Length: 106
Image (cartoon, rainbow, N blue to C red):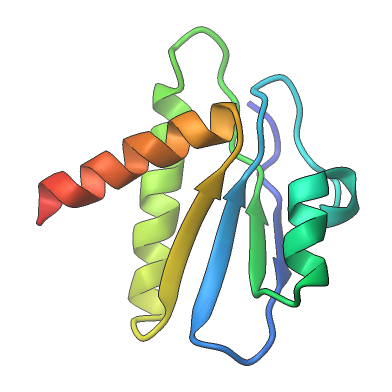
């Protein structure tokens, strides 16, 4: 399992953008490595990049479980923050799974 790294570029705001990169065969070392993350950063959005564990061969289940726990814990610690979830390629797949699970929990 890869090391999970979180990059936080937050300014004072009640809205935070979580960006899930593509993959699953790589992780990001910084926001400059991804054009979409760079755009969000340049627009001065509150941006959090999350490198998920990337476990091969299980259809993203481990990454999904990690992210689900990560986002619920973040929301628990920051209850007044609006969370915006964005993903590209594999990250988009994970974002759609997470969105579905949130909708089903209501």
